[in-house]
Image (tube, rainbow, N blue to C red; front, side):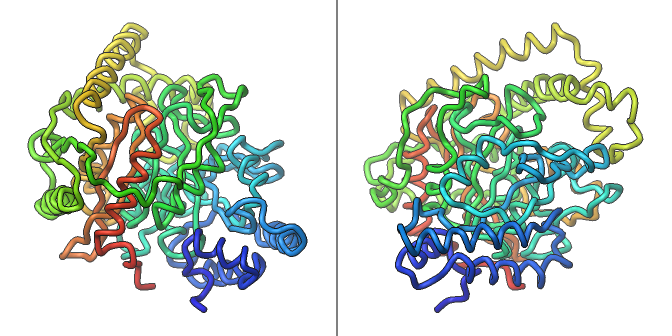
Length: 464
């Protein structure tokens, strides 16, 4: 049998259900993989081997008697360390939070626990999900498993690195301006930012109350749908939560894209923020492949990327400042220099500017929603460049905003990143985005699955 740590979530789940693989065997293999690779990758902030093994043994016993509760029963899932796990620190990768122990599970953790998942590790993040790869923090930054000299994307950097390196079959990240999709793009994964309100954020340390999302990061589209099945759902404890009926996001994964109308937002990468030639070529090839699979692909025009980015900053920064105001005044030296530099401008954005940004946000949301009167899905870039060197601070600063993920935090529409190529120079993954109407997760997962089947990238993995 394939080494358990190499199995995608769905395949491991099928073997567990058939009693051909035990949760204990799977966890042991994942822990061995972590032990072997963690010195290079720095993806793990806190290893929870003992607790996870107890949960895996309990899962094994229950499955032997009653069968699995769900496909996640006995599956190891990593947690970005801004997500609360009862009894464990939620450090936010920061000196300011080293001693803060979560009293209860975050809502998404409670849902995963009820589904039978086990939690072997809290994973690295950019400090408070905003700082960037910094070297003046209590923990080193996570590195890209495709080439450890390179940035894995952020801020869900440890989640991306751990899943891509086959340390874990799945992880949760958070996304305020692209922080699930960025590491998914740079690490060759599937990363979904759900519709705003579909997944609860209760128990997740906030960056921006009206832009934050929690999303699944996996190796395959089916795995992503399985994780979304477990974490989606209304939570009255989250004031932004939407009351939506339960849905099985795996049902349409084999339906293909024949007959779907896909709008290619080419101007995002061709004019607004010109992409590197390799990224541009990969996007064109992806559009052609989707057309060959039966989709009707045509160009569509949305407001310029710069408008979305400006609105995102004018909302995120003052909301973040409201969270960090006391620490910024009383303990500014305890932040990484990069985090402090990114947070401080929020202290100086006026209430009038914030309100105007929210008004413009509504207009941008309506413009994107109007596009779905003409097409079923949107296709666009994720990052405009392959991952840069992690220790090249100037290049990290230059490339970080060169992306097309932020628009869909502003509008709240669901967006998924899927691998669409490999850079020739450094052998690093490239990614695209598929975007759907509000609560259109099933449709974008269906299209992403069709692309994944037709494209040659699914079996590629880092050579570690």
